[in-house]
Image 1: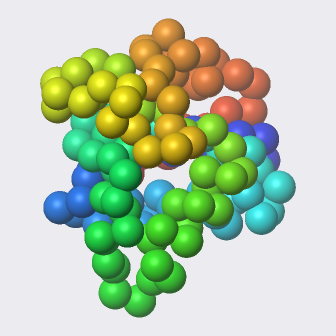
Image 2: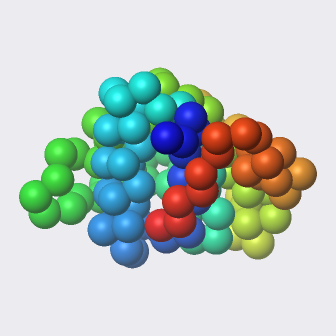
Length: 120
């Protein structure tokens, strides 16, 4: 069994279903004793803006902000440095609990024993 899920979210507010999938898997994994890291990449860095997740809805899903809070409280949330820069976002634009991080940190997370990457 994986000891850690690295959830890579490449979708943003315009495509809430994969976001909801990632957050559902993440919150379920945490309750099951699996560590979780959430990585926002590509359009996924939009989720790092305060208020972005609160505005998202997904039918037949708990509120995405509740799932986000569960994942954020259970493990680290990172936003890709280059992806942020491409969207004219800086560290000051990030919601509480999101850390800017680059490729080196992502590779280190994936290289850990027991890490499994899931893409959304």
